[in-house]
Every structure is written in structure tokens, then in C-alpha cells.
Image (cartoon, rainbow, N blue to C red; front, side):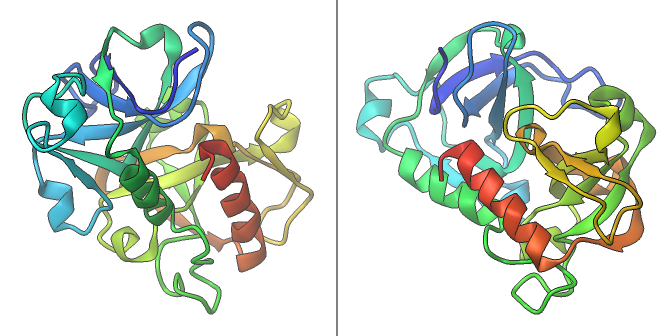
Length: 239
């Protein structure tokens, strides 16, 4: 098994506009060593997304006891971004560079914030009102081809969602097209969709708003659906 906190190198992203570098990512969910998917947090020495308000944790390997022993896998101060999530096949994990230990509680708190747990929906009356959270969006063709879904529900925390940078979303499709897997939500014919819906919680990930989201569909889920999604996301990540 592979466990949260492990730092793995992933290969470059194949899609147009994807990350061209093989780089370190931090595993956030446990997964098997073969034929499984783990959700990873993006890592970068650049503070670009910090300046846009993205949830992050700064890992300084010179300032953490575990890092001073050279075991984190990072050699320079690096921002860990749970606001930018990547599902990765365990077969694509290149090699393990190290492990995050001291910063894991802060990273888990930042993940809760990045996911906007408890904030509700853009069409509700809570903190997410007027944001992108809860909006149903269509994905750009390249993104659709890569992940096999055409639309998703944005779950990004309200403030960063309005920066229109990396949006966290859960893919959705008509339930009849898929057999639900462990962790998926099945929602019978909601008011915001013309058929029974599958919400693929274990495939939560990021899309870069300017290029990987083609449009807002005009629909959004309500607070009740967002509450169900939040509970499922918290269970997925053990939050």
C-alpha cells in the first residue's frame, strides 16, 4: 500500500497545456501499489497561486526535523497546494522521493479549506453564495478526452473559486452510463439534471479555469447536494 504523506514523482501530463515536467506530488489518499488511483497535491517552488489566494502549506526542509534528516524528498522551500489536486494511477508513480510528516496536520487543514467543506453552494445563502462553488460546468474537449467526463460540479472554496484559476471539481454524468464505484454518489433525477446522476467523488481533481473549463452550463446544485458532496469528500480524504 501507499499512504498519505508520501512524496512521489509523476510523469509529465500528456494533454495539451498540461504540466510538461515530471515533478514531485504529495499523496493525500491511500492506494494500492497496482491498478488503483491516488489523489495527489501539486507541489511547486513558485508562489503564483499563493498570490491568487490558493490554500497552501509552505514546506521548508531546513526548518522541519524530518526535513533536516533529508527525508521529505524536497531540497528547497516548496509550496504544497491542496487547492490543485491530481488523480494519478498508482502504475504511474515513478519513484518515492520522501515523506511529509511534520506538515501533514497543516496540509489536512489546508485541504479542508481548499475543498470549501461546509461553505454551501453559490445558489445558497451561506459563505459560497455568489461564487463558483456548486456551479455545473462543461469541460474543454482536451480535458474531456483525458478524464472521460464532460461536466463537473465545482467544489473550490468560495474566495479562490472567484479568482478563476485552478478549480476543484467532481465529475458528473448520467448514472445509466456507469456502474457506481465505492465512494461515488448516486442522485436520483435532481432538479438540476434531466436524469439520474453519478457524482464521481473519488475522481475529484483540478481544471485550469481559463483553458480547461469551456463554459458554465447555467445550472448549479443547491446546499443540500453540496452537503452530501462535502460529506463524501471528507470521507474520501479522512478529514
